[in-house]
Length: 557
Image (cartoon, rainbow, N blue to C red; front, top):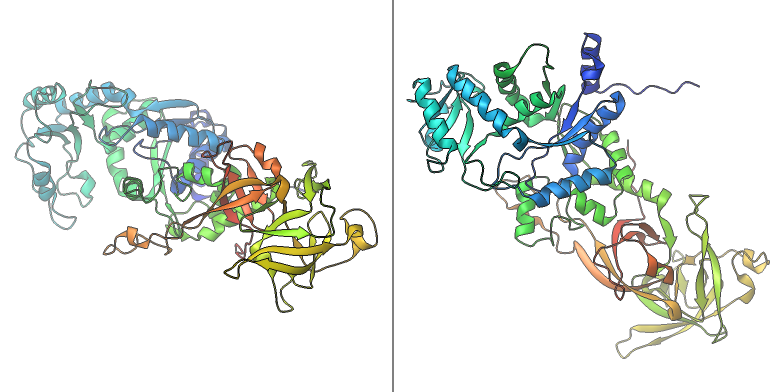
């Protein structure tokens, strides 16, 4: 049966149309161009998957280009983090390039534009320039320096480059149209003076190109065929094309910009400025805090590349922005972890259970599956003994008929082990239960094949042998914000919506196999949720982060 073809999204249709109209497939090239002024977040994964996905679909190269034109905010730390995120997602780029690689060429092109009467040096402060632009419904006011002689602008631009003026003293502006209804075309600034060291070029440059000037020309230098960006740059496209007109040469690839809708997810913030505030004001422990929507944070939380890619594919490529429910993302996380996570036993709120008729000095190893969803996952042995830990919430002295866990006089099965019956309890001076005493049916061992082992009871509990238990720190993460759109109201500071219960740290016990758990590897704590070992772990204190709960009531359409 022939596999059904997926319909093309609008970007793929653009490319197909270009190919049908004579564009050579071998000239296809894409790029992902982050600015290294912060860590990548969940919103960036859409752009990453679109660009690298097109590269895979058309067997075309994809560049990873850092748009590093603002030394005030950019750092090598962010470059390294971005590269690590791309690698973790499983994408390979053809070239690692930087806008700063082209500073010399960009400067030469700017000089030529001055000579051609297409650019001029303006000595007005930025506030005055902004005021003269007016608004889309009113013609702008031309700068008094707009028609200064080219030789004069060239001399001043050279002095700007040499650092002979203070920051803000002057700028280089393109000479386009001060009456254009598109504000981006009203003589935009191309260069500003910034006497700041650059993370790659050091103190070599005292002027830096503006994003709009550097971005499109970088695409052209790299011969990127399709420059794909988010919708907020749609009204920048005429400027992108105008700048290309100034440098385009025959027989070179004429790159085109096209825009797609950004992706926003409930309970998450994707403004780098606001994420920076969370870090700076210590609302989180850093950019890779597991509560952060950064790729580094999601990786540390235990999300998988496959889950994120499947989520992006389901969201699709649209022209209109929409708000995606976080439950959809969590659905794909659960779906993937269910396939790959090793099942283990751990107790996060322990109470001791003693099986009174189990021999005191006896212990045994019980066989249990690593993952019933994966026939190649195999099995392992876990120790069982007279004294165990179970979850405190799994026991009640008295309970109604709908409580299928352990209660006095009631029976449950211990997973992979025996059927037990609760007999009595011991309490402390505050009335808190400290120990549950039970008896077991020796012939009811799981998998033994006896008639008693086949006896059905309604409840099955997980447990950990007290003698062999591994003490673990368990970090229960929840959503960072209490409202789906924490930055929707401009009048209210988004930090007011921080969830005070976004992290709870508890001390639990786990089966001894987790002593050798790998950092970042997924585990299902049976009946509790999916977890992963955190990098904060030490030999004496293993730390596990909850990725997501087991229950998934979300039904994607």
